[in-house]
Amino acid sequence: MAMLHAATPHQAMAPPHLRRITVQDIRAALREGLDDFMAMPTHVLFLVVIYPIAGLIIATLTFDNDLIPVLFPLASGFALIGPFAAIGLYELSRRREQGLDTAWTHAYELLTGRHAGAIAAVGFVLTLIFVAWIVAAMGLYWALYGSTTHDSVLAFVAEVLTTPRGWMLILFGNLVGAAFSLVALAVSAVSFPLIIDRGADAGTAIETSVALLRENPRTMLTWGLVVAGLLVVGMLPLFVGLALVLPILGHATWHLYRRAVAP
Image (cartoon, rainbow, N blue to C red; front, side, top):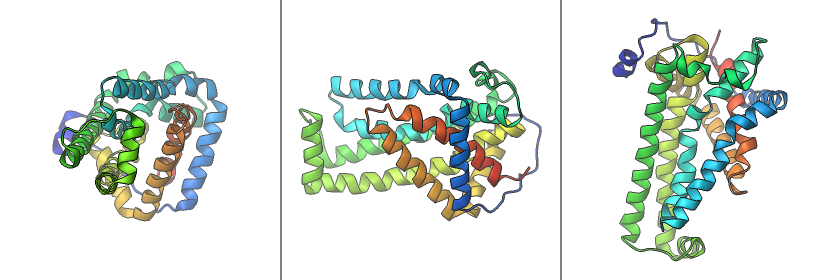
């Protein structure tokens, strides 16, 4: 953590004051996120079209290279780096909140500004978590299946759903995935919005995000479950639903930050 403070030499700031938040705040943040999406649909769809496209690319590469077992880890792990990719949505919500121009050209201006170093540092941490999840997921698969291959996705799904070995893969895979998701949630819950809003360094942003989870465990775990559930729904129709789900979640994250971190 000290390295993150040193790597992003922003002006030192006192730790932000955190509020107690409840499920009602989550509901309100989702409503406000939907309102932002309705107010800026063209801009948002342009920004997130990469998500369904990336999902289809992941699926295609998996099928073509006989890497079917890695499809689920890649698809589910996609959510671990989602907060980094959503920084443009946070910026649009901030600009709308302040009555500024919300043209999509402003969404990623901060990547070349004074916030770039801190954003990159937190994004790097999330990328490490994503890579570690893929390694752990494949290690679990190899431990259970060795070099076994499958002829098709249906054959692999049948194997996983109907055999004791497959049930072990589901059980331990979900437990390991939940652990990585919890770490990613702790790191990114409000870190990017805090950087964008106040110019915090990466260390302060992550520490604040972790503190929010520590002080509001039930609410933040509920938020994590809501995010996971909506992402699953968005992935079902060949990832295309993510073009709707992701912008709403991105905007909602900004509004949850506003409710959780005192001005």
